[in-house]
Length: 328
Image (cartoon, rainbow, N blue to C red; front, side):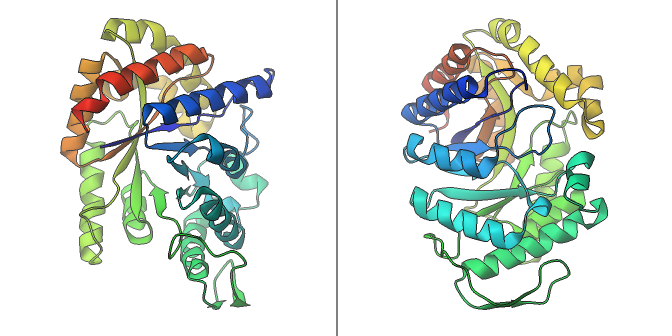
C-alpha cells in the first residue's frame, strides 16, 4: 500500500500567499522525510480561493520531494492544448528523473469552462482526443492527427520524456461512463473517495475492471489510487474535535459552486462515510477496508483551510508512525 498527500494549495485571497506556500513546502518536505510515496497538485482557474497553478507547483516541488512520485490531482485537460501538456510533462519527467504522473479530468465548474470557451458538452471529447494525442507525441514519432479539436500535421515533440512512452496517465472520473473512459484511456482510475454512498467505490471499481477486461488491458499490477480526507490524532474523539471544524469550513467554501452544493447539504453523511478523522486504530480499520476492496494507493488531503501547519504535520507524523506499519 502506498500513501500520498495532496499539496492542497488553495488559500483565502486576502491572506499572504508566500507565507502559506512556505508552510506547504515545509509540510511536503516533512512528508518526504517520513516516507510518504507521492504528492499531488490541484488545478482551478478564476477560483474563489487563491490557487497557484499545478505545473508551476510541480516544478517547485521537484527538489523538495526526494524520491516521491509527483502528479496532478487533477489537471483540467479541456482547458489546455494537448501539445502544451505533452511538452510540459515531458519536461517535468526529465527534471524529476521520471517521477511524474499526469492526472487529468474533464472539469465541472461552469465559470472555468466558460472562461476558456469550452462547451460543457464537448469537454469529454476534448479529454479523449487530448490523451490520445499526448501519447502519440510522447512516442517521439512524427504525428499526423486529423482531430476534431487539435489537428496536427507532421508534428514531433520538442522534448521527449525520460520515461519510455511518457509518464503514466491517471484519469479522474465519477460517473459510470466516465469510469469506463478512464479504463480505456488511462493507466489508472483516480477514484474520488468522497461519495456519501457506501457502494460507490466497489460498484465503480467493478465497472473499471470489467471495461479493462473487455479491452484486454491489464487489471493486475496496476495503480489503484483513491483520494480521501484524513486527519490522525491519538484518539478519534481528539481527531474529530481538532479537525472537523476546519473540514466543515473548507467544504462550505467548495459548496459555493453549484455542482458541489450537495457537499454542504449532506456534510453529515460525508463525515459518517468518507471523512477519515480518527485514531490510528480507526484509520487502519477504514484503510484496510479500502485495501480489501482493491485500492493500493491512498492519497489524502492532510489538512484544511486555516489548520495550523504544525497540526497538519503532527497528523502526518502520527499516521506514518502508527498506520504505515500495518500496510507495509
